[in-house]
Length: 337
Image (cartoon, rainbow, N blue to C red):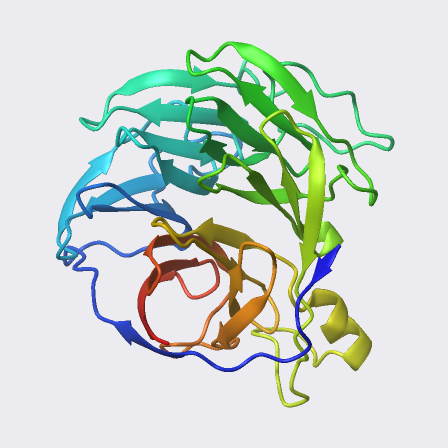
């Protein structure tokens, strides 16, 4: 196990104005954010209410230009839209939306048309209800998902899907969408998961899994062979308050601090890993071997503060987009290390 250093310096950063929403549009809970090769930014928001899934539709995929100007909504009224969870862009600028509510992952081409679908939601002609949680959990089924959370790829184009809140595994498909394998189950041991919530891949093809419920990041090779784990143990100042809820005891604070809600890895010859937690609401900058280089922010409602960062995009070492659930926004952060 690689455990982070016990203290880390604050990184100076700014939250810069970026998104130019139309006059009649607001973000809902910002579940996901991604950036393509042209600098376009995609936000997967729990907004919209155009029709029923299991309840009101809570998925809206929005595209913004490099200057933050709103360009379009992608997939309006899509059959898969139910409850937004994450959005990613692959090396070919395809846009992937992960919808936790419908148990589906949808790939759009850069023009915004559906080109590949994974998973299937329950039919309205049946019980019209999401999968329930039972103990012990139902066995995972190849090609079927129960509240999936994220997607990533390796250099060969193989597809890795984290699945998720009910299943506790990583599913692997080849670049054509054919099933290859799965690994993981619910538990605390190496290679087991408690809500695999976010995924990232480094230049060597290692798969980083934000194992949120176990408060660790696990690292695997492309075949699912466990290699190591990273734990972030930076002390929580006693003055830290949660965004909502009662003040936490030191033991509760320690148990939550560093639990990875969202991770991303920067491009370039020297890569860095960023990880965000829900409390105390910080972003951590790490080397790929798990050393904490610095921290940013805290829980709150002001700029440079965070309310449950749910996904991050880091197109460069010193630029981060942070999508927040509780504050209904995405902040563009510029670091001054």
